[in-house]
Image (cartoon, rainbow, N blue to C red; front, side, top):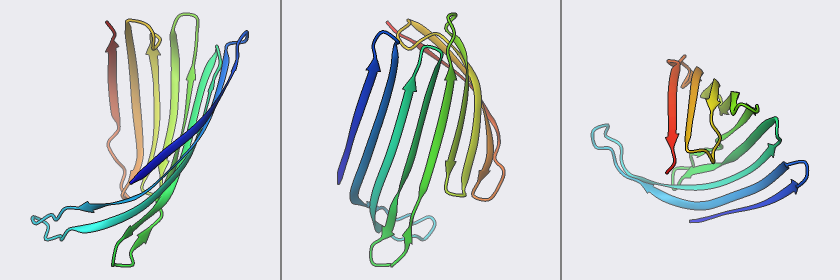
Length: 156
């Protein structure tokens, strides 16, 4: 399997603004083992992947977004799928190191999710806390349970 990514970064030094842009791709295959409990045989899956991503880091906000796509083919069956998805993430920044988080994820027509939250602490600080509520709209044609996360990180 071959995976690769290339990216560009631009920084406005006195303004403390950074922009990043990247493209990625992959090609390969793998064998999915048999699931005897379900009566499914093993098969070989051939795949390709591509993606583009962008990040804008400003003293008052952080935005990141990514689009991914590709093809999956079960070798010998003629079955082909073209999965695709994206996310957009927006984080507010304040002098108090506290801010809001809003994110939207979508993958094909099978998965859509809004995340709303807040954080305390910056990545380089010794302690951080994040609270997130996920509103899961759709997965495999059915409404899913929402989730509430409490996440913390300690650096030493």
